[in-house]
Amino acid sequence: MITCDGGRPFAVDRKWFWELGGYDTGLEIWGGEQYEISFKVWMCGGRMEDIPCSRVGHIYRKYVPYKVPGGVSLARNLKRVAEVWMDEYAEFIYQRRPEYRHLSAGDMSAQKELRASLSCRNFRWFMSEVAWDLPKHYPPVEPPAAAWGSGMCVESKHFTSGTPIRMETCLKGRGEAGWTHGQVFTLGWREDVRVGDPMHTKKVCFDAISHNSAVTLYDCHGMRGNQLWKYRKDKTLYHPISNSCMDSSAADKKVFMSTCDPSSPSQWWAFEKTNGTVLEQFNHSEN
Image 1 (cartoon, rainbow, N blue to C red):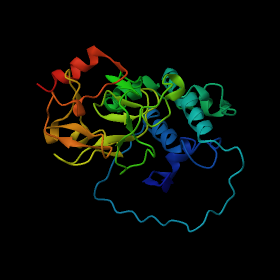
Image 2: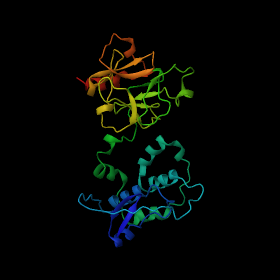
Image 3: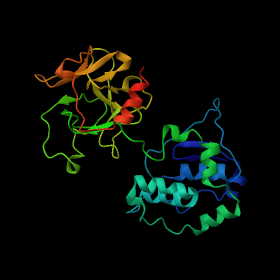
Image 4: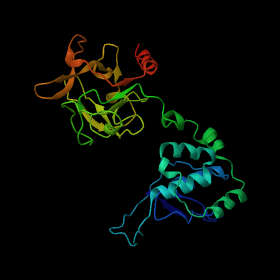
């Protein structure tokens, strides 16, 4: 039996698929089923394997043959999967998405009974035996950031990948009301600089190709490289891969890479808030 899980085809023995209860019929339209089937397979005695030499044809529809009812929410599906399968780890989701906590996920009694009847393992086992390396790349609790704030006077108005960042007049009235404007950036645990405050970063990062190139926003990839930055004690933002520093021109409002010169005010960048301990850890790895 071949089924398509959110655009991800996989093959499974038909008999065993139905012994596992198939997909949770309480999930609406789409979203969350990829997590549910994965957790269910691993925790209830099976395993999923990647077959690198396989060839799968995927035919896309030109139209949606059903109507999506009003009020369908991806959040509802995700909460349902978390409540049935993730045990105490569901709390990490609620810490990041407080609005999920009081959301109704429907009647889950049949799914919980299925889990009990199959003698499935708990989610702690899944995290320690199957997804043991996941916290390294996606920690359940966001590690503390090294620096953040709106004091840089760098502007990223559109938050879209490929957009150059520019110098603009610093906005007044900072604080909580200003966390969504385009002058807030965070140097986080991945050592990249993202738009937004530590708890609400967007998935676009400062990126530079080489010495003398412009600094642009680019989709965050978490692979360091062009998106690795070091905020040093001399207040320069050092870019190891190009061995240069982020510089600026007040005249034409451009932000670009240049030879590091700690004596140049155009290379001094001030975050509103910094965590000295985390910064020291980051910069120690440079040596």
